[in-house]
Amino acid sequence: MSTPADTAGRTPRIVRTAAELSAAIARAIEFNAPEQGTATLGLVPTMGALHSGHESLVSTARAHNDVLVVSIFVNELQFNDAQDFARYPRTLEADVEILARAGADIVFAPQASTVYPDGRPLIKIDSGELGSKFEGASRPGHFDGMLAVVAKLLHFAMPPATLGVPVSYRAYFGQKDAQQLVLINRMVADLNYPVEICSVPIIRSAEGLALSSRNQFLTAEQAKAALVIHRALSLVKERAERHEPLYLEDAAGLFEMEPLVELDYFELVDPRTLQELAFNCQDTPFTGEGLLLVAARVGEVRLIDNMPLGY
Amino acid sequence: MSTPADTAGRTPRIVRTAAELSAAIARAIEFNAPEQGTATLGLVPTMGALHSGHESLVSTARAHNDVLVVSIFVNELQFNDAQDFARYPRTLEADVEILARAGADIVFAPQASTVYPDGRPLIKIDSGELGSKFEGASRPGHFDGMLAVVAKLLHFAMPPATLGVPVSYRAYFGQKDAQQLVLINRMVADLNYPVEICSVPIIRSAEGLALSSRNQFLTAEQAKAALVIHRALSLVKERAERHEPLYLEDAAGLFEMEPLVELDYFELVDPRTLQELAFNCQDTPFTGEGLLLVAARVGEVRLIDNMPLGY
Image (cartoon, rainbow over all chains, first blue to last red; front, top):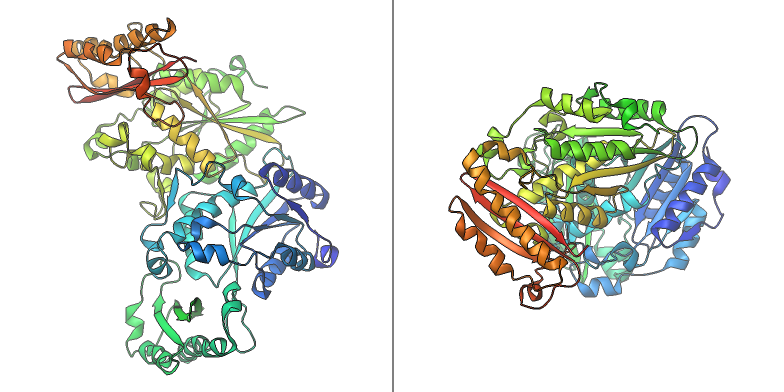
């Protein structure tokens, strides 16, 4: 098996089409597969504009797989705002440098015409109720568009059955987009995709701000104000760890002291179903498992964050 | 490569769960794969109640593949009428006999709890406009439910990547359900499923009635009246072959002479997009490609049929 030490620093192979990707995966597997047993192939789907959060995702996937594919595609379908899509950072050269350092073997950077050759798909993925709450409530169509491209990417990078080498297939997503991760796990289960979904924890700045490609749009003052998100999450987490009542409303109240930050939601949910765990908001000690979700606007920038509790 | 002569008459292996299916496919491929080159795996999804139409589908798939899986699952999600679901014929024993004769290697007959372990899927396939016209107009939700199960079955029977034998994968559908075939082709393209979709022509009774599991609900008198469907299709086809104007309304008029048969639609469409080709209904000679779609009610039974023109 390849280790980060073997491959880190080598420039990954950049491919643009589905056929190039399949051929590159086939060659990489033939080259890197163990002499006996099953090879492992990892996929990390991204929209580029890579930061240390992605680097951690890629490094984890690198350490666990013989062959590592990272896709970079800014998926118009998941932007409900055309301006947001237009100004989303496209930094392929810098991304490839980061991916070389993190040890990706293959970068799949398709054109829109490769992913959507006939324009918008006629057959759509409907994320249903799970995709219309929380982030879905303020970004109509976002999760349907996200699932549409993930449904494709999982097939694009699937180990070719014509290869003749036993391969086990995993795809990696960050825990920062918690609702996205729940939806992808649900889609993979509901459509029986032959892939294992893996996730890695949020990476934060030293001060606690969850890394995001959108943070670059924050002024220094806004970035400082945004730290209230982590303060509020941490406050609840500490209470959960001490098995105290969570007093969510009281933690949410911290946002009132930051006029630059407008809270959208601050909710404790079931980590698999996203059902609100209202009972934990009462003043009884917290038990069980929960996921604390938060979204807030800072100027024009929408930030999301979350904190797992009790596990 | 196995030929029908090798395997016909052997009782297929019946499996119930996804794990059993994968294991059976792995064993069958290891046993039947050619010494060199790529093995071929075919899947024929059915709802059972097999008739000669299915037998033709299975025989075609048998002749073209080293390993042949036939699935039998009455998919509640595609029935918009609970009564229709309840009375849909379930004839596993007879089906397996037919499949033994046709040479299937594996019969996948899952329980509903295997296909839908969590009840109805939360992430749905939305067949959109393509699925809401023609059959979709009178069967709301039918095509979404059909795609939901096909999306799963294509993954259930996919050659396991962990196998280590090169396999090429195909799935077979009959041309009788023309709109279903268009939708499945569209889903496979839109979601980039790594499978080749193959289709086989309609099988008809000697008198011309397209075979269907629903024909058994017709009285002899109704079955005779239903022959008007094929008469109307054939009339138009003959005109197309002579490069004459099609006069569709005039062919549709034949239904008025059969009081037992109530015409729903009789439309010429593009065979890939299902767009109505209205210009061909005018009195100019027919050129190009078209698909003539028809649906009619005979008593309680809804019958569909179609005829490709110009190819």
